[in-house]
Image (cartoon, each protein chain N blue to C red):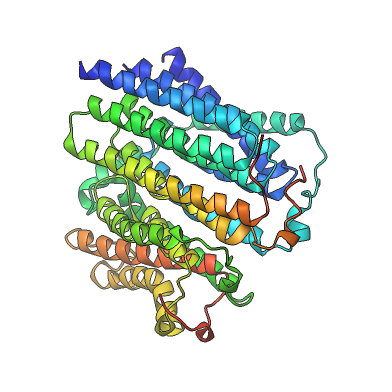
Length: 95
Length: 311
Length: 97
């Protein structure tokens, strides 16, 4: 069973590494942020599978902390990083 | 070790190196910040793989919450022309020399580590546990055996707050005015949960992974979310009360450290029968104080009385 | 029995993660990517949680798994709405055939 969990975790990690292409390609800041979100959800799933493989209960707490903070980055991004004025928003095509 | 396990570790390492490289050398700052945040998430997974759930917890609480929020908010404060600008290519070196350097450094470190006596200080800590006053060896080291280090860490954090606050006023005004009707609802749901998990981690620190730093980071995440949803620092809190809250952790630490000298004559030598209570006081004061300090870092300046309104 | 059922749920979850990534990489604009990613990932994590809950025999643990999924549902939904609104306000027009 341990092997099954590790194989699953490996699959998820490979999945997110492929998705990193979206961080590189953009084109808008929102697209990059989306890969960040994917990474957050994947990290929770990877931790859960690692718990399944090792049985260390504290891992579930780490996953809980990730889950509870999942919205943090996007909220900050929308409220602070991406100003509402399109005039100053010329960075996004620049990659 | 099964191949799947080894492959997982290898891929984890590889993606961490790539993300770290992106974090430093990405062509655009936003990309660098996103890469760094992802790096933080993977670091927590790496700590889990190293069977260090305490550090994983701290890294998860800080990396997924505050660090990203601080960087993203800072990015929003930069002038647009600087934000979009390509990062300075200070080092036009290719990745290869750095990779070689990193590899050499790791090898040296590995050699040094292998040369050290094998169990390190672990056995001495475990043999001293009966007098520690807590059941968790990590908390025992942080708040009893090496409490002096933790005291200084908290002092450094307070200094950082003082330095940032001396640079100017807070930056609440720069909050985006985009309509976000779902945001207050989310924060109303998450804030109590974050406060609850703060106290859960403080309580849990006594006998398992948890403790003041991750607890403080979760508290700060709750406060920062509230600020982002449009809450203001209540007026009666600005000034002296806020400063007291910022200093509370350090003050409690110093008072107890000096106070126990009355009994044993040694700085920080908790008398074993009082140790559980003293450590609990220090942990709670430090945790809450760390939460307020991290939020103060996010504010980026001392809140003024003039903004009106309240939470 | 529950071991096999749990394993099937986890594998299903992994497949949904894969489809989310495919959407993120292949869809033409931020709104469609958002649509692919947030829904597929939330469901995928739910399936993984359910699979692990079937493997666990401890009530507290199953409760924590449920809590993780609920938190991700709430955060995921809110974040999708926030990003979509922000993108619209920035003048990014939804893709049309």
